[in-house]
Image 1 (cartoon, rainbow, N blue to C red):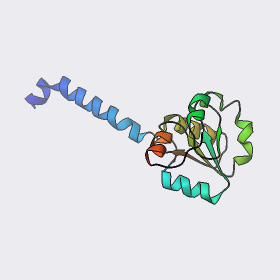
Image 2 (cartoon, helix red, strand yellow):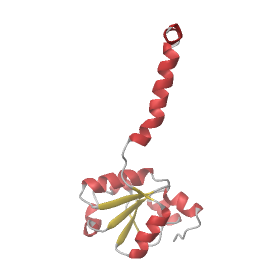
Image 3 (cartoon, rainbow, N blue to C red):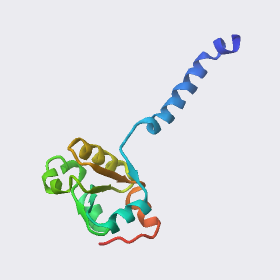
Image 4 (spheres, rainbow, N blue to C red):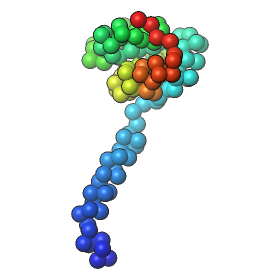
Length: 133
């Protein structure tokens, strides 16, 4: 008991830092889809690949048949993809962070099957999967 009282500050720091490490895993940021699953959805058809990167990033290389709507403009331009509400939508960004935000926004807007590409285009390219310029 004396050890705990003498080191309460260090124990508190350890608990807070451990909680901070676990927090991202506990937060639900929407469904993720692996590269294999994304490829399967894309091959089945009626899948919208929504690239939420900036136009400069998009023009440097993107997934085949992807539509580019930057995350900052997504809420205003959601009408452009309204017809895909019942289809599978795969949101894509560079590493999977912005696409998770986009997936959450699309879920709130009533899109039924929205996924975020796990690892984004960086992981897609590292696997040697095709991109278009």
